[in-house]
Length: 179
Image (cartoon, rainbow, N blue to C red; front, side, top):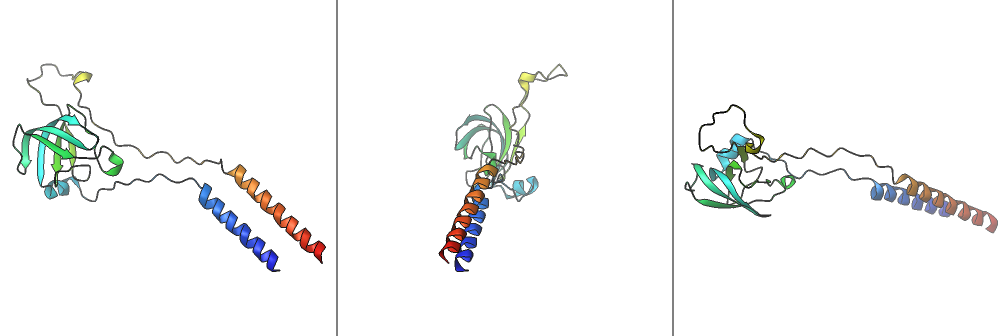
């Protein structure tokens, strides 16, 4: 009886381990902003509108067009820390595009507050249609990836079940012949 209980325990452990190890993971979305845009504006230490002049993996530089809140000055080049990954609550700024940017402690991102703005125009346009080359580049938020159900683990799982059943049969046969 003890051998049978031990075999069942091993099979249960292998089965649960197989489910845990080979089950496909669901995508994780790390960024979830708790504040509305109005609350972001209120909480910001500095709010400016400006044109992006440089983007690196860790920072953005923009020339300030106007100051809504804080100690920046018009014409100043402002450098802010930012993660380019929107999944990590950063923002993928585009060089040459205009934004209203909130900042706290020298950093910005989706949850601090970033809004794309139309390009500044030097003259009043005479045509009603805007050519595609004049469109403001705006980053798109990534849509969640569709959940794919992969069945690649069925064959290895079936093989493990057959192997475990064979081991149980051999153990029972040896126990029966020993009596």
